[in-house]
Length: 337
Image 1 (cartoon, rainbow, N blue to C red):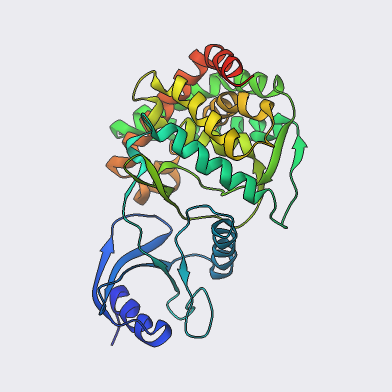
Image 2: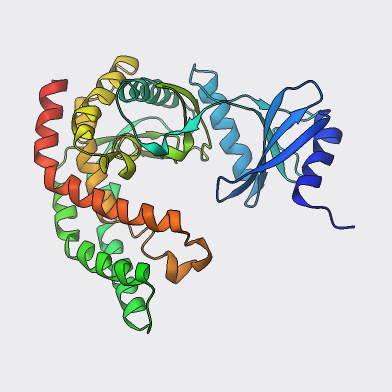
């Protein structure tokens, strides 16, 4: 008999974790995993994550999450199997404490700015100690390979131009790709004009879906990637200049400054150059990124109405950041100096 994904989870919970599940329901979230909410016989809730990708990489990512948790970052606790492993490889799956809250996909507003900044500062302060890589300074042009981006946009434009009967989103993506390709020279100039910036181990995917909020407080940081060094300013921009937030209105400009103030209070060793450069890094990176413009060409099944909405917001946010870049940078410098 072929077991369903949920049945496999129930079997693993009992045999590998000693958890007797009385309720298992799938959570419609995540693209690289299948996620389940579990209630056990004692009434305790759990979060089960079934993997589709490379298990060893996921194990290393869980190690980074535990490293952050031990440094005081709000990260859910992973439950080990009866054999002491963080992943039951037979499914494969991991089991976590369940965290109440909602993702930050609604955008950052009000007191959330400072709260998120404080947690992010604590996270980066802790991950700067990770043995995988010590923090170093690198030229900011390394944030994004503009030459490669040119080739990617050329491929997108050629791909759509060779098709007949484009969908509304494909037709929009073609025009957006042309517009962004024309702005790659400005993206290159933005990065070339920045000072050297800090590269260190970071979360790796700190977008709003991976930040759980409970009211104005950060309930949890989830879904770490395997430890790898990247620009700290890039990761700050991913959440501080998230398209969903930027498109809410002009509050993001003053809100970003509050986020960075909270960040520095928790991570006083951070460099002013990294903080002030955040919006420039976010602008240049987003201008030169083809996601999700290329999804109808490369992965049509991934194109959903929500992805289309996000794609349009991401494009518009990049243009807003470009238009307001000097104004925002001056404001950040005045607020943080």
